[in-house]
Amino acid sequence: MELICTICLFLNLAPWLVLGLPPTWTQPEQVHLSYPGVPGSMEVTWTTFNKTGSTVEYGRLGGRLFALSTQGKSTLFVDSGDEKRSMYIHRVILTGLKPTATYVYHCGSDEGWSDVFYFTALNDSVHFSPKFALYGDLGNENPQSLARLQKDTQLGMYDAILHIGDFAYDMHEDNARIGDEFMRQIQSIAAYVPYMTCPGNHEATYNFSNYRNRFSMPGQTESLWYSWNLGSAHIISLSTEVYFYLNYGQELIFRQLEWLKKDLEEANRPKNRAMRPWIITMGHRPMYCSDDDQDDCTNFDSYVRMGRNDTKPPAPGLEDLLYRYGVDLELWAHEHTYERLWPVYGDKVYNGSREQPYVNPKAPVHIITGSAGCRERTDKFNPNPKQWSAFRSTDYGYTRMQVVNGSHLYLEQVSDDHNGKVIDTIWLVKEKHGPSAWL
Image (cartoon, rainbow, N blue to C red):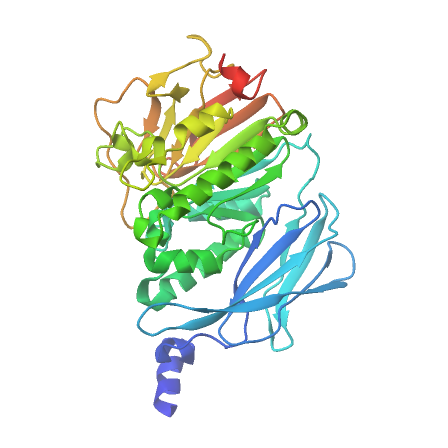
């Protein structure tokens, strides 16, 4: 041990790094926020490597520090790798928060407290104009867009972040230590704004166990699919992976479809659709794309779009269902590129008009944003895209979105390769929402 301490002093390393052990067993780390879906609430999630208390102490910015305290609970997560590493995932839901108020908080117990963080409670008004960053495919290695996203977050540019699948590359690697490193890395963003996620193919190992255990999304489906409201938008997170990992249970396809249909029916009740006219989905693998990598979306009969005939019974795809319930905007990742599509349904373009294609379009709009940065680098495009491909870029970057009001939604693509330059913008304008908007 003396030799190890000498090495640590020489290399300026903590002993636990040299020994390959976790840091202080009861010290909170990997802190991140999510929105439970109930106005005036926020969920705080963190990790320790030994069982300890689950407390968040918090207070209004400018008021008495840590004037409030809420208890939660922890669950033991044992990774399925060879070492069967164990960790405790702590979850505390704060309630009774005043909308738009800023709170300062830390989490942990008397055996160890986190750094001090802050967040702004979400505005619960349907007239609120929320701003988002959205992207997929962000890894520990080559996370090119991360520094810019960190700065954006520190500037208060976002009310929530949507990570549309593929984390760390891969969270289970090195007996889940890569997952630990990613969660520490993303804390610089996710401890300050709700970090809303959906599963991608890189989370599939051990039946998505690292994803299901580390994140805390609304609902009772272990974050695999869920929905929530913000401003005038109803946002649905889906698992496209149910179509690809049948060994984990093909019944998941039908469970998600049943849930999705009920959710869309509820969102389309006249009172609900009038209050929150925008329906936005996010799922990892796109229905359409013009990359040249032979992924599912390059096929006319893609699983996500058209379903699978080799299940019993045959499993429908997502396109008809989302179209039938008037989904306005569909967000995707997986392809390590950015691609904006013209309004499309059934492989055909349905622009609002030649001059204003995104004004009262006659089909959903698709955005693919999977180039945040990872070790697999960016993809290449097919040189001959179909007519529905409107704009595409292989730059590293991410997308910003603002749901301005019930009729106007703004999107822009940020290129990290070009020092934060906005390389693409659209206004999606809809005077009518719902299935009748397609007529």
